[in-house]
Image 1 (cartoon, rainbow, N blue to C red):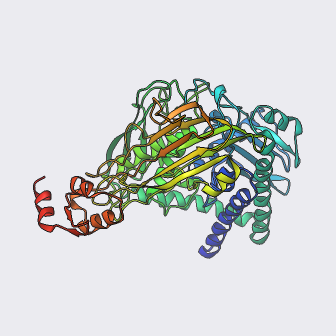
Image 2 (image 1 turned 45 degrees about the horizontal axis):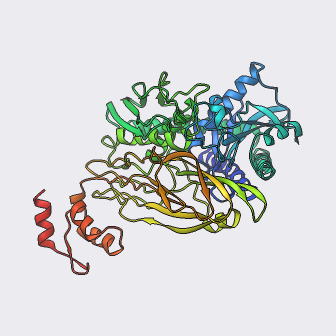
Amino acid sequence: MTLDPITLGVIQAGLQQVCDEMDLSFSRAAFSPVIAEANDRSDGIYSAKDGSLIAQGAGGLPVFVGAMQYSTRTLIEMIREGRALPPEPEDIYIVNDPYLGGTHLMDVRFAKPYYRDGEIFCWLSNTGHWPDTGGSVPGGFSASATAVEQEGLRLPPVKLFKKGRMDEEIYAIICSNIRVADQRIGDVKAQAAALAKGAERLDALLDRYGDDTVREAIGELRHRANTQMRACIAMIPDGVYESTAWVDSDGVVDEPLAINLAITKTGDELDFDFSKSSPPCIGPMNSVLATTLSSVYLAMRHIFPEVPISAGAFEPLKVRRPEGTFLDAHYPRPVSGCAAEVSQRIAEAVFAALVTALPDRVTAAPAGTSGNFALGGHDPDRDRDFVMYQLSGGGYGGNADHDGLANGCSTIGISKAPPVEIMEQVFPVLYHRYALREGSGGAGKHRGGFGLEYQLELRRGDARASFVMDHGRYGPQGALGGADGARNEVTVWQNGRAHTPPHLSKEQDIAMGAGDHVLVRTPGGGGYGDPFERDPEAVLKDVLLERYTCDQARDLFGVAISGDPGEIDAAETTRLRQSR
């Protein structure tokens, strides 16, 4: 059978739509704001043979692309080897073990076998960020954990749903090990309902076009994604491209961790070598292999967004296993920072390596942190405990065509910060400020986007705050002469006294009482190109909008603005730029 292009395109869109509807169902039904409002989740369809990616929702987190593929493949292997119970119709496995193809423990994955005529046609899987999975601190982001057990409950692949019915004993074990357990049932049922919606929509697609036709289309789509990625890679000149990205610290030892990358381009393939990166660290900034692989995949997706999301697109990307480094974590290394922070440093390393080869496609470094802030305590007015999780955006890097986006989502996903109104309604907090962080974008011909600045107050009760963020030591890298973006900053006011974490943006168990404040200032994106080549009119516009001061315009861009300010002093600007 040979599929005509129209049928192939319709089936491709249909598979995408199945995943999109799963995403939408998951968010609409979820209880936790981090899923319902921030959309920190993803849904996809995976091969019954090897777990390879068939399709993923457009609204899902890109970092889960490779991780869920790895996780599904591991589950299939465990079933074949008898290390996991064999599947039956309407079963749903739950797993969050990071060493079995995951990210960190808060990212809980469900996997459901999808049957046609008594055989598994494919797997449906999704991941949702639970606001708490136990561990030493509320929210799971233990900045000083030295073993994974301190980060929360670790689940191997077990059947939470058996033939469509939830196993109450397994669920009771989960609830006995996590905080605010009574609120998790809403997320669990939402996650299961999303998979049920996917099965329903997949039934309709297969009934319409036939199992054999859809199966052939899946194979052809994988082949074409492979071919298209190879064609894109062929645009890169053969050679070796190197870069270094830095993680501030591991949260325990106050020393930076290096991600050293060498990319070798040969023909239509890329070889990624991280072997010279720092060794495994004591604290929670280790990355499991699945997250490291996925970080490379998502970085290349940023560079070549036209390539369809499919396992075929990853096949020309050869990532050597970075054994002996902190990018290949093994039990019991702690990993809470891998998905949200280390993954973005890996992507930054890819961008920094390839920007000279692909200057029209690759950007300067984005903010590169998810801004993980967890606050857990007791609300006396409602007489119940709470765990609040806040993620936040930052500036994107400038690029060859325009300035970076301000307050964009993180590199690893398209999740957005939960609305302030929702957070104040659900948790005992009050936001005093939520605004762009002026001046934070790195200077360049095209400047970086601006980060975010927010300040909140604990209104009542007692709580403990934890932070796992990054780019507090070094700002996001500029490219091709552009300046770095502003660094991340965290300040906690306890009884009116300002406290800055010793690790700059990583700390746990900070005691807070009613009236105490937290101030977070996220990084701006790196600048792209020589700042003195920036259009003076663009600099004036930024000054008039109070994004930069007149002094910053002079010092960073060599543009002299006179008046109140209101106009460019062309002669002085020329002199400043020529004198450099």
